[in-house]
Image (cartoon, rainbow, N blue to C red; front, side, top):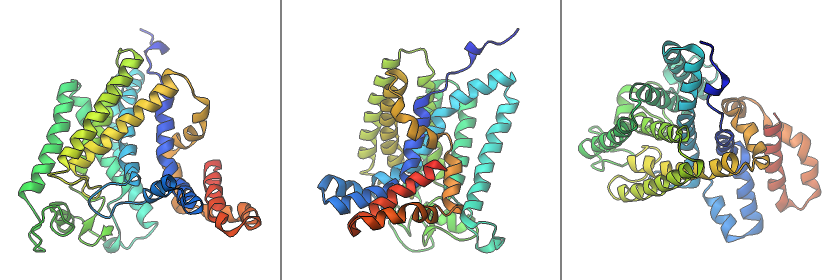
Length: 359
C-alpha cells in the first residue's frame, strides 16, 4: 500500500528557532550583553551580564542553561524523527543504527573538538559537551523506543534521578578525605572520573565537568525532552499542549528548588535538582516558542534564530576552528574606531555575531 505524505510528522519551526536561540548565546551574544551592561550601567543589563558566565560549583546562572537546553531540544525532536524514519524505512533496524551511529559520532566529534588532530593519547581529554549529548541522547532514545507508554518513560525519568541522588547520598570519594558528598573533592562523580576516565580533565582538578557518572542524570534530561515531544505530537488541541507545558514547567522548577535543599543545583554534577530546575525552564521556553511560532504563526522574527538552529553542530565546530575574530576585525574595526572607546567592545561583539551568522 502506497504511503501518503499525510502520514509524515510536520516539522515544528519553533524547535529550530529555540535551538538557534540557545546556540545564539555561545555564538557571541554573551559578549554583546556584557558590553551593554558595562556601557549603559543599567541594573537590569548589568544583572543579565553577570548571568553570562558559569557558576563555579553550586548554584545557577542563565549561562548554565545552554547545555541542558540543547540536550532537551534534541530529546523533543526525537519522537518526530522516529515517526519520520519509521515512515520511510518500515522498521526499527535502521532506527537503531541511526541512534548508535549518531551517539557515537558525537562522542568522536567531541574528542576531536577538544584535542584537534593531536595523537598524544595519554594527555587527551576524552569527555566533552558533544560526548555528553551523544551518550545521554542515545541512552534516552533507546529507552523511549522500547517503552512507548508515557507512564513507563516517566518512571524511567524519575528512577534515573532518584537513583542518581541516592548514589551521592550513600557514597563519596574515598581517596581525598573530604566528607562532603557534594563537594569538588568529595563527590562520587569525580572519584569515578579519576578511577575510570583516561587522559586529562576539565574544568576542575578532581574530575571532569562532562565526566562519566552525570551522563546518568543527563539521560533524564533527554527523556524529559522526549516526553515533551510526545505531547507535541499528540492529538490534543494546540492551546492545551501549551498549557500543559507551562504547568509542567512551573512544577519542575518548584521540585528543583525543593530538591536543591538536599541535593544542590549543580551543573558540573548535573544534579537531580539541576535536571528539574533547567527542565522546568526548558519546558517554559518550549511553550512560549511553540505558542508564538507554531500556534499563533508569528514567524518572520524567528528567521534569524532558525538559521542558527538548523546548523547547530556546524556552528559549534566552526567556532573552534575558524577565526571569526579576524574576520570581525577586518569588517568592523574601522567602524569601531569611529566611535568613542567605550562603544568598541559592543560594536565588535555585534560584528562577531554577524560574521558567524552569515557563515
